[in-house]
Image (cartoon, rainbow, N blue to C red):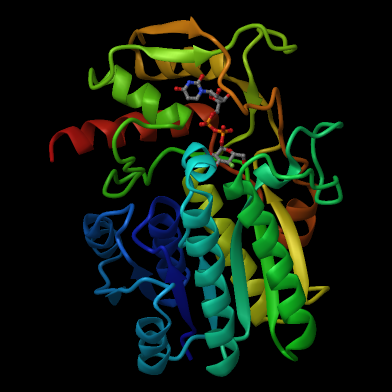
Length: 340
Ligand code: UFG
C-alpha cells in the first residue's frame, strides 16, 4: 500500500525538492502552500520532474477551517511541515507576523494530525537554534543558545511544541531536522530557489550577481577570526537535504526511531568560508564575479558547521553532492529562471 505524505510549504524551495524525492521513493504526496513566498510554477516543476499529477491545495495552514478540509479530503501517514516565514531580518521588524505564522500553523497542524490520525511528523528546524556555539562542529547535544531573532525563536519553540505533543499522544512521533545552509537546485533546473526581491542569502545573491541582476556582491566582513577573515557555514545541497526527509519519514513509518522525538543535524560536516564559496563558484562556472568586501552584517555569527555523526549512523544518511556540483546546479537554475 502506498503511503501518503502531506508537505506543507510544498511550493517552497526545500518543500518542492522534498516532494520530488518522496515521489521518487514511492510515496504519494499532497502539497499545501499559501503561495505567500512561493510560486505555483514550482508545483508544475515537481509534476514535470516526476511525471505525476501531484495534488496541490492552496491553503494557509493558519486558516484552521481550510486546513481541516485538506485532512478531510486525504488520509496522511506522515506530514513534513515546511510552511513558515523565514527572513531573519524581517522577523526582528515584525515579530508578531513570525509568531503568528510559524506558531499558529504548527499548532493547527499538530491538532489536526492528532484528530485525523496522522502519527508521523517532521519539522523543519534550523542550525540557527545553536546561535554562536562555543565548540565546533555542533552536535545535537550542543546547547541551544537564546535566539537572536523572533524567527530563530519560533524554530526553538516549535521543536519544543513537537517534543511536548508527541510525549502525550500515544503513537505519535516527531523528528526535527536542523538544516544548515541549503543551496543549489534540482539538476533538471525545473525547480530551485526563487527569492522575492533582493536575496538575503549568499548563494542566490551570487547567482543573481553573475547573471547581471545585481551589480556587486557584498561580502559581509573579512575581519572575522577565521583563516581568510570571512564567515564560515556548512552549505548543504538541497537534494541531499530533501533526501534526509525521505529517510526520516521511512524511519518513523517503519518504527526504527529510538525515541518518540528525535533531532538530527542535516549538513555536510564541512565548514566553507564566504570567500572560498565565491572562488569555487567562479572556478566551477568559469566566470568572474563582481564582489567587494563590505562591513559585517548585524547578527551574523562567525562560524558554524555540523557534526553529522548522528544522521550518518542513525538515519544512514549523508550528504553526497560536492560543493562544486551544487554550485553548478545553482548557476544552471539561475540561467533557467532568466529565460522565464
Ligand atoms: N553573506 C554575504 N553577502 C550576502 C549574503 C550573505 O557575505 O549578500 C554572508 C553572510 O554574512 C554569512 C554567509 O554569507 O556569513 C551566509 O549567509 P546567509 O544569509 O546565506 O545564511 P545565514 O547563515 O545567515 O542564515 C541561514 C538561513 C537562516 C538560518 C541561519 C542559521 O538563511 O534561515 O542560516 O541556521 F536561520
